[in-house]
Amino acid sequence: MNHLPLIIKREYLAKVKNKSFILMTFLSPLILVGLLSLVAYLTSVNNEKVRTIAVLDESGFLSETLVSTDQMIYENLSDISLEAAKKLSNKNNSYGLLHVPDLAIEDVSSQIKFYSEESPSLSLISNLESKIEKRLGELKLKKLGVDLSKIKAAKTYIDINQENFEGEKTSKTGSFLKLIFGGAAGYLLFMFIIIYGNLIMRSVIEEKTSRIIEVIISSVKPIKLMLGKIFGTSLAGITQFAIWIILIAVFSVAISFIFGIDFSATPQQEMMANAVSENSANSEIQVIISEFNSLPLLNLVIAFVLFFTGGYLLYSSLYAAIGAAVDNETDTQQFVMPIVMLLVVGFYVGFFTSLEDPHGTISTVFSYIPFTSPIVMLIRIPFGVPIWEQVLSLAILIFTFVITVWIAAKIYRVGILMYGKKPSYKELIKWMKY
Image 1 (cartoon, helix red, strand yellow):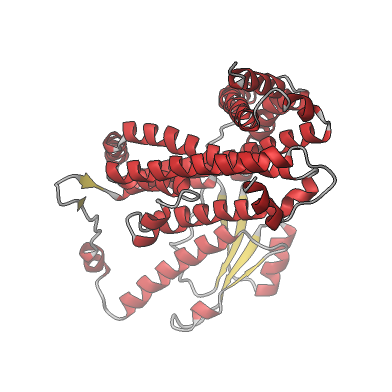
Image 2 (cartoon, helix red, strand yellow):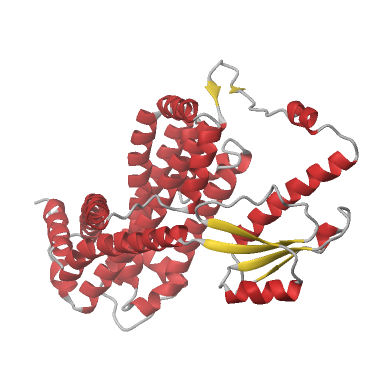
């Protein structure tokens, strides 16, 4: 009789009916959305805060530069000393005092100071520096007799058109979209392996320490028991992820509707809006849609499913073998560390090498190594990887998975009935020969 479907069903139901599993399935999205809501609310409160900055411009250089806005009010002070300006600013609870001394334009830049009770915002100081630099630069050019209108007319903005040798057009926006798709796929696989690989390992340890495994192993082959745990836990993990996505969407809409919180209300969003308005929003949106349509979406979906599944099963078999070899989670550290290091290497190569040079030697080599290929190849595919390379990488991954399952099953068969002893790497090698 084939016990594998029964084992998968048992593992799946055992996981999804577990109280902690149910609690975290519903609590995790709520906590995540709650934290995002808190950040969005605090950001909106911060954006609505009106700051008043007193300006003592003894030089007269900035008279036309600092213009008040809804969130920033510049209060110009005149005919008073610096000490008096400090006391007045402090009395009026101003955010700070900007002092520009009466010096020659060549000397004033290093003598400008900002006085405040507390450390000022870095973005505010950077904004002030940018405005003052631009104004002083213009004044210096005027002093040298340079016509500013001609300089402005001579400014040229370059947007290099990108195209491959087959005539297909690309752009910086397309590269950014590919980076998002590849990075998200690689990161999702990385986190899924870490979370649910450890779940499989703990499940094996729990059954081993409770001696339930001795009853099960008498009627089921170890390899089937191990595969049942891997597939059952994987299905439970996919179920949890699907519920998380649905609940996050529902909670986000509900909180936004009830409390009126705008999750996009961030300074970065405002900067992006300004940038889009300056560079023709309609044109930018058309480019994004065009680049999105040009992505190999079918290839991305199929490759994601295959490499995601292959990578997860490969690492899950290792986690199951580790769980069978030890008696408690404390003893797992020496065996888990090499697995985590392999994942980190794949993550590092994928994000810091493949995204910069997706077709370079390092990226190509690591996309064939089975322990790093799931992450690296998923990041490379949006940038255009030949089908034969994907098939070859997937074939190597599947072959390695089969070998790894065979080796892990040998360790599982012996270690599942071993108690009270912490095995070494040397002993694990002996178990593979049994």
